Amino acid sequence: MRFESVKYLEWFKTRGKVRIDLCPSGMKGFSLKKLNLNREELEISGKNIHGYQPLCQAIAARYKVREENVVTTFGTSHALFLVCGALIERGDRVIVEKPAYEPLLAVPMCMEANIIRIKRRFEKGYQVDLKEFESLLLPKTKLVILTNLHNPSGVFLSRSFLKDLAGIAQKKGVTVLIDEIYLEFLEGEETQSSFSLGENIVVISSLTKVYGLGGLRCGWILASSQLARKIRRIIDYIYVDGVFIGEQISAKVFCQLDLLNKKNKELVEQNKSKIKNFIQNEERLTWVEPAGGSVCFPRIREGLTGDRLAAVLQEKYRTSVVPGSFFEEAQHFRLGLGVPPLTFNRGLENIKKVLEGF
Ligand SMILES: Cc1ncc(COP(=O)(O)O)c(C=O)c1O
Image (cartoon, helix red, strand yellow):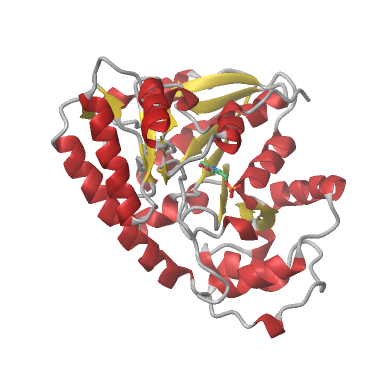
């Protein structure tokens, strides 16, 4: 394995002081008190070989799968690493969406996969072209990696589309890995997890973004029982069991997810309508409107790049947005929608001031 730096995360962790932070892609989260958890009921250690059973059961029930299809992980990042570790051998072709959240690219790369990109074009509303996808399925293709909702654009891939895509991949023996960390910002039948849409679909997710509970490191993989078994064997190389107290809290939180989601969704929808209005009245900006979720990816028409905008915002106003080049599109910048309304308003005012200066 070869570990190059993951530039976006390095940048994110070493940014200077920020006053108005529009970078985070998730929600702020809830305190233990707000979650109404009784600390007396929590224990440091307990039975959790292959995961804490009440948590595995809660995940299985929520996503309507069998417990044997669930592997609990330390967040989606860990889930990604395990799935790639289980499936990729050196020289395998792995298709990754472009633009992409960098770790989705870095992980198969560190496993010395041959990385192929499937373009999600701004002009095509960041959807995936099925014909183009099919043409990439050459021999030695092992895996395709997509996000739904898409990070950075927030665009949604429909269930019927994913079913077709998985069907095409299945014929060539290719696994489809879908990172659904943002999906539960949407509601209804159409936005259920895609796991059941094909035998070759693997889903990864966590409580990090929609629920703002990243500190719990509660993630999971939904996979065929055979792949899940293989992943459990890899886990034996890394640790014996999980963090019991965290797993206990996560299991209790699972009963409250719909309520927490409601509160968070109100905030992102409020901020989304503000940015929509802002872009409509700002001729230097355009975007593909996100289906929902906590990120969007505006494009600057001309005269300025997303990197320059981010640099000036930081320098003059201590306001932070993600430069588009971290998502391989320098004309863009990524905005987080999960921040408090006042912070969001002030951030937009500062963006306006910088745009006016160019
Ligand atoms: C698409 C995507 N997957 C995974 C992660 C990381 O997830 P976690 O904090 O659960 O490891 C992020 C964080 O930004 C993300 O955007």
